[in-house]
Length: 132
Length: 89
Image 1 (tube, rainbow over the protein chains, first blue to last red):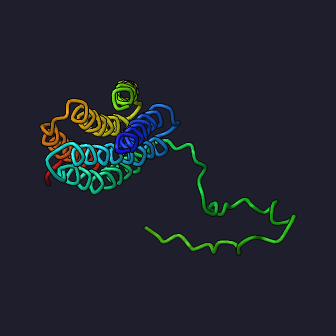
Image 2: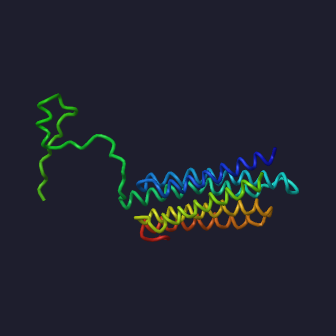
Image 3: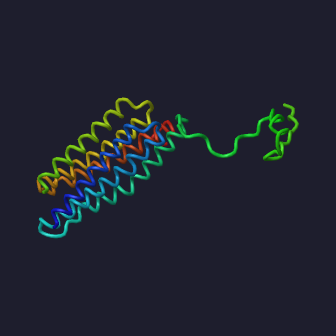
């Protein structure tokens, strides 16, 4: 019974670890690549650590709680490093495959579009240039 | 049952190592390479835990904990260097 549960946990853990690295290798840009290792791999290692705690609790002298330390540390530090890497990517202005979201900035020569329908937003006020 | 599952898990983690190494060599930008190094140390923790189950030894947890500590510190140091141009300001 314990062996079946252990085998299942080990297979899930190794599978998610592999999937995380597959995402790192295959996804198109950095912002999507960040998803694989930070979520899938962390989940996989967590599953492997649960399997290890179960194994040493079942076969060892007593309850084994070494793994909880590694699990806690890993689960606390993975989001921190992911956020740091995302900040680095934004700072370096890396290419992203996602289209930009939000309203486009108003363009000055939008008169042709305005004749066909009502404007989506009022025209931008024109401020006088301040003399240098 | 475990004697069948553990070699499969070793093979999967080794494939994860290979894919991360490929991204480390081919990654077009510096954050890609840092992310590949981050993935590599987490894969190393997974491999050490598997080895601990395989050999029925609790010796490997300390190594896994040390790798987790140094890996996190090095990832943050590299990111800080790219972000600010300096590690400790």
